Length: 193
Image (cartoon, rainbow, N blue to C red; front, side, top):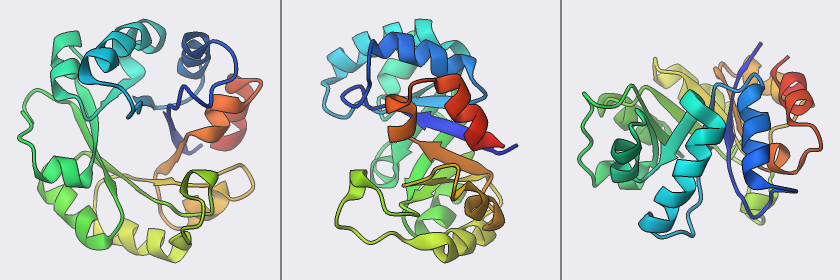
């Protein structure tokens, strides 16, 4: 079974966002990255407090280090450009993830103490409409370049998940599917097989 991380986008969510987070957290996902980039830090913190109730230990804070510390959350994920320009208390966090788009970024993320990285976008996706996907050969190169887990992101579904595994990734990150599916438990179970 492949590891899966859900990435949120409340604007895509069908139905109640926090109910959806509860369903996702009850599934086989390894974590839930609360990636709501349109919010101020204050708004994000308020959302994260509610998301923490829904997700518990599976919640991963995106970018907002102060929010993570305020809520006692020891998992953080950041864009590589942000990670390079911030000072992170590595002793505080159990998990530090970074979004990488090249082998060089992946190697740097590992040197900076990241415990995992996301790599993308691997397949065509509406989230990156008009941008060509990097493909599974890129994913394979990146997986071979680092010793930390790599999670593919971008256009991943149960039809192409086997290609992610074959490239050497630990698993995948999924946004759209997890936000719009009718049954989160079934969706993630099918994807992880």
